[in-house]
Image (tube, rainbow, N blue to C red; front, side):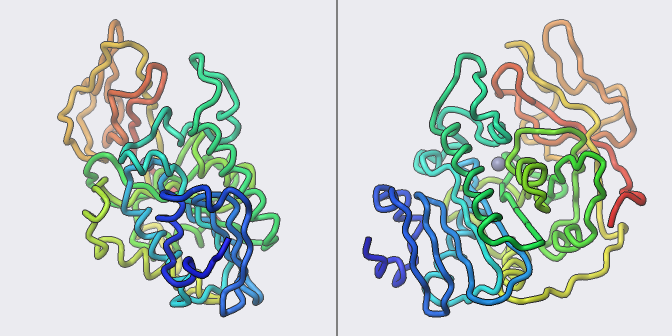
Length: 347
Ligand SMILES: [Zn+2]
């Protein structure tokens, strides 16, 4: 393939969406600053700079195809690198995850991709064995593993960037995957704070999300990062994300990044209290559709109900996150969280 147009316009995402056949075979080339670029498939692009580096960084976006802000942030970043406007010091893998879902401006085509990692893509559920999301989840897992192996740096990172379906009282927040009792990282939380994210949701169990995969299988500092509310392509005010964009660029292009010392008072930390799955077709949520994430309800309030079951607030300060009554049967329709402290389990 002639890579010249890619170096001139940097339109890797647009070419991946409009002419995926261009990237049906791996392509390797070198930028002016000697960064090696490897494209392994449409939407999968890796950069390894020709210098000593400290950390390998994975940025993924578009796991949900209609979550446009992270896709635009990563698209700008890739364009700037390809066109020579930005010179990396740290290896970077960028994953534009669900290209067909972007094309139809939907969250997914067949199935929620962020429930298909850690091997879930290969487990038959409700008669589904294979679809484009499952094939892609397997491919993305492999590209993360291959990238960390190729770079072989001691620090591994993965930020899986999303936007939420609804408004949030805490506009930006990160989900910290379950660490199986390992300590949380002060450095990682300080980096998130520098990105403008001070709300952290501690996960309490293994999941099939992309960030849990990188955390658990690859030992990465990995997070699901929620950046605000879903808007159509071009409808995002990039000013809302400037702190994140600036911090990411410094983190990628400098040997060290100055971070504020960790202080728990800078954060709002929550832990998961209830996971409410939709079991019946008559499942309904007892609050308005536009209720923001992190809204709290009084003890005893019936948050949701379905035949024979009511889901009730049991703790003071219990707040809702990710409500979605329309999920498939058996899937998570609502999380509740309660404020918590990180205590001493942090390094
Ligand atoms: Zn999402």
